[in-house]
Image 1 (cartoon, rainbow, N blue to C red):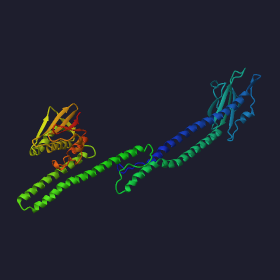
Image 2 (image 1 turned 120 degrees about the horizontal axis):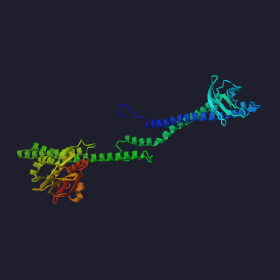
Image 3 (image 1 turned 90 degrees about the vertical axis):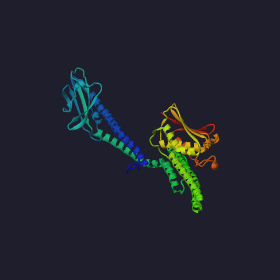
Image 4 (image 1 turned 60 degrees about the horizontal axis):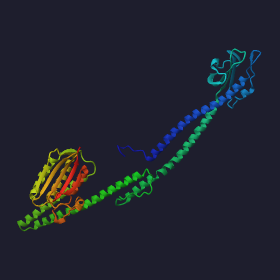
Length: 463
C-alpha cells in the first residue's frame, strides 16, 4: 500500500474490468444497431406487402363511359391478413370527391404524389398509428387525378419487431454469459506464470540464509521476462553489495584488530612498568596505536559516506584553490614531521566546480596524505590546478617510489598495501576512498608517473 490506507485493485479484477467493460459496451452498441436494422427490415418487408395490395387495387381503377369505375379484388385485402388481425383501411378519390372507402382517412395533396412509385407514410387514424401506402393515377378523359390509398395498423409490425429484438437480446445474453464463464479460467491460465514467479520468490523466504542467485522459473511469457531480468539484476546488485559488505566488515575487523591488540599489550606493560621510561614508552605506543585506530575509523567512515547509496546532497560551488589551501594547513604538521615539502601550484583561475564539498575535501586530503606518507625524506608533495576548456584538473604528485603500471588497479582496492608491513603504516583505504568519491561525483581518476613518484590526476567536468 502507498499513500495512506488506499489499496490498489488486484491485477485479476483489473483484467476482468478491462475485458467486461468493452464487452458490455459492445453488447449495447450491437443491441442499438440491431434495433435499427430489425426495424428497417420489418418496415421494408411489410411496406412491400402493403405496396402490392395498393398496386392490385390501383390496377382495377378504369374509365367506362366517361366515369371512373373499380373492382376491389378480395386477394388484395387477403395479402394484408395476419395473425395480429390488423385493421385495413382504403380510400379512392377522384380529385377531392370520394369514390369509395373511408372518407376520414388522412388525404394527401395529389400534386405531391407520383404516378410511378407508391409513397409510404405514418399517420394517426381513429386513435391508432397506421402506415399508409398511396399513389396517383392519371386516367384518360378524366381531368382530376385519382388517388388510391391503402392503410393498415401496426400490431403485426410491432410484434414481429419485438420478437426479433427479444431473440437478439437472448443471443447477446447467452454470448455474454458464455464469455463470463470462460473469462475466469482463462484469467487463471493467463496469470499462472505470474503465480509461478511469485511462488519461486516466496519459496526463498523459508531459507535461513538469503538466496541471491538468479531466479529459476523456466520459460516465461515475453511480458514477464523484463520483470524477471530486472529482478535478477537487483539480486545480483544486492549480492555484490552483501559480498562487499561482508568483505569490508572482515577487512575492517582485521585492520582494527592490530591497533587494538597493541593497545591491550601496551596498557598491560604500562601497568607493570617499574620505571618512568618504561611507562613513557608504553604511553607513546598507546598514543601511536590510538592515532592509527582513529585514522582507520575516519577513513572507514569516509569510505562508507563515499559509497552511500542514493543521491548526493545538492551541489555547491567549490573553490579548489581555497580547498587545497585548507588541506595543506591541515596536513602541514604531518609534512614537517616527515621532512616533506608541501607545495601548491596553480595558474590563473578560476578553479571552481560544482560538487559535494565534504567528498572533495576527503578525496584531496587522502591524496595529500598518501603523497606525504609514501614519500622520501627531503622529498616534495605538490598540488597543481589546471583550468582546461570544459574541465578542471586536480593533480597531486610526489617524489616517492611510485606504483608500477600493472599494480595501479590493485592499489585502488580496499585494504591493499603494496609494500605490506615493510612500508609506512596505513590502512590501504586512501586510493579506494579517492576512487569511490570520484565515481560518485562523475570525475575521472588517473594514476601516472611523476618521474620519480606517483602522479594522481582527477578531472572535474565544468559547464
